[in-house]
Image (cartoon, rainbow, N blue to C red):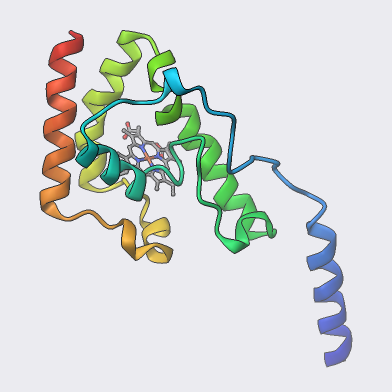
Length: 145
Ligand code: HEC
């Protein structure tokens, strides 16, 4: 009985590997489309946001292993659909403005996603870092307007 339980668990585990979302961690990057910002801002964004909002996601070992991959890759897909910092310069001014407007609020509770922070403590932002991002977003917003 026990043996067949593990056997079938293994069969199911192997079978689901064939159902992949196929969201690559790395996408081709065009230099001229990448976000330009002060080094401090870029380093915070890279550490805390680029694992979802960029074309250079650092894939963990489970990135391609179902069923975890379904969640991880879906987050990356949805995050990129909203903001992909690697394509920032290809966005219209209106879109950039809207995103910069929402960015400070997103830092209050939702971003980086709590389920992600659980696995990536190093992505946690200090109050100071949140202030740096908020200030940068506000300044840039003013410039775009
Ligand atoms: C684990 C993946 C993940 C990480 C890391 C992450 N995000 Fe997101 N982000 C998402 C997803 C998924 C969405 C879109 C769906 C949603 O709104 O929940 C999103 C949406 C957003 C939005 C637009 C939605 C809104 O609030 O109106 C902003 C702004 C944003 N993220 C900023 C950030 C910033 C800044 C960081 C880094 C400090 C970050 N995110 C880190 C996954 C992530």
